[in-house]
Amino acid sequence: MNEKSKHPDLRVIISNKQILKIAMPIAAAIAVPQINFITNNIFLGGLGQQSLAVAGITGVYYLIFAVIGIGLNNGLQTLIARRAGENRIDEIGNLFSQGVRIAVVLAIAGMLITWFLAPAVLRWSLHDEQDVQMATHFLSIRIVGLFFLYLYQMRNALLVGTNQSKYLVIGTASEALTNIILDYALIYGKFGLPALGFNGAAYASVIAEFMGLFVIFLVIHYKGISKQLHLFKSFYYDSGNTKLILQQSSPLIAQHAISIISWEFFYILIEHHGTRDLAISNTMRNIFGFFGCFTWAFASTTSTMVSNIIGQGMHDRVIELIHKIMKLSMGFSITVAIIVNLYPNIFLSIYGQGEEFIQAAIPVLRIVSVALVLMSFSTIWLNAVTGTGNSKVNLLIEACTISIYCIYVYTVLERLNLPITIGWGSEWVYWTCMFIPSYWYIKSGKWKKKKL
Image 1: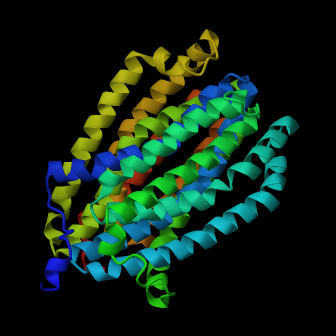
Image 2: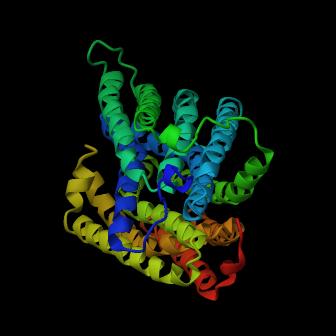
Image 3: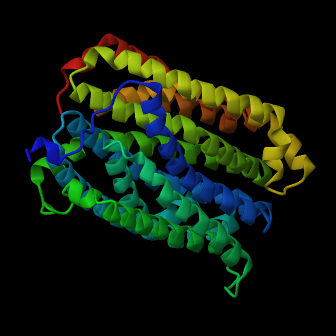
């Protein structure tokens, strides 16, 4: 048996079928944390509007650290996809091992920051002391799940980068089911478990993240993927690949972190407008996050497939690929936007906050639905930049966009004290400013000389 026949061919082809084959399981995987957030908020809404409001602050705070893992995931995924496109299968296992090492260090750092620094930051930024106490206690528990989440994301990078995203669904389904059952049990004290109230959602999410990691580990083991890709054959420290992963991932980590930190800044400004406005904005985050899963899945597919076909030497077909993915992404988002605008009450009533709350939230929901469409093509072009390997360009684009975003939200919400409907218009500003430089960079062809 020759060497080539020992390994699968992990190179992709440019077709709608290939795009959907990669994207749909990713959408399911991305949906899990969003389902967890929504489930938490639905059950927490039963405890009162304050719990629903504070859940917005804690949810975005945890998301800051979650997207740091996504940045590492995207960088590692790009490298794995490039090696898959080059058919250099033996190098994938070592890349994965070094990614796991880095993920563990980042998880420990995130937990320490939350336990020792977050209480002071929350006390300084929030107006209501009871909000501070609730958020602090919740996050001290919730942050433990970061360790499981980061390792889970590394396995996602492996499966997506090697075109085996279909296995993600198994892990995500087990995580979502665990979270729903334990949310109900631990918040309200069902099935013989203690009623932990607001903090019950934190315990439920941590256990669910562990379950997702455990199940996907079993899948990778029993499907023979570990052996096939030599995942633990070279678990020793490799300074070269570690440096390569950090060079590729660091700008993406910074990009994702500043993006969500700016969103936390937005929520802090919303908190200054009162509990109801914060609760409305939290429901918008849930709706935006859940329906955005399709777009983010296509975005992840973009970075993977772009990197893969560049590895195959097909630089001249990158634009063709982007256009195919963008059409699919926009089709999903436009469909969602129409449905949300036709039946807004259905989506808002699940939080159980009454008719007055729903009527106040509908104008904001309409703004968010348009933002979903803008995001559906902007993030495709941004992730195409990621796929080229020029992650520093991603960071530059994000930094410039975030600066404009923060100026807008501070001026509108804090200085002019305008309604949150206008404040949520910041999403239109954000995605428009994101699209323009990303589109220009890909069209310029400057990325064609980049080597990984």
